[in-house]
Length: 189
Ligand code: GRF
Image 1 (tube, rainbow, N blue to C red):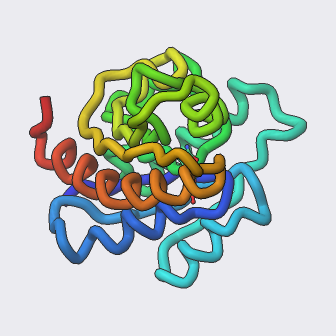
Image 2: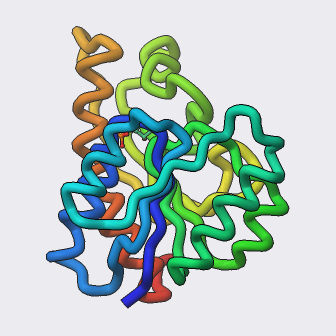
């Protein structure tokens, strides 16, 4: 069973999905949750699930110093796989190399379309009929790493950013635990 560290900055619904997934997949366990935001809902969710949850603020810290804090915490908890779940910081190549294990992210579009912020708004502006969710490995680019799993979501004529985001989020919650399970078992292509 692989020990997973989740990095989250916000509400934490994907963290919740990963925690729920533990009962379906016995390949991983969330061993640590780190947030750079003290008020993040993800911390409340982690504590409710009795998981170690720590705040490592990035404000007032140099990027390298903050990443060193994160790396130290991951090592102290024996984390082997990192999952970004609404983590609003881009990790440096140095961090990715020095962690050494897989780092996963979930993104609300069918990558490589619409990387970066506001992916759902980008999809609506482009007029695509399908968007979706992607689980991918993290490299030093923005949403550019190897794709592990994807689920398409149809864009409806009357969709707003909110309604489309809500349907894509449901897809994220389905594929993130499955994608993590694949990586934890050394599978996935
Ligand atoms: C999700 O849409 C995720 O794809 C994006 O940020 C959002 C995080 O939501 N990277 P939550 O905090 O997991 O609820």
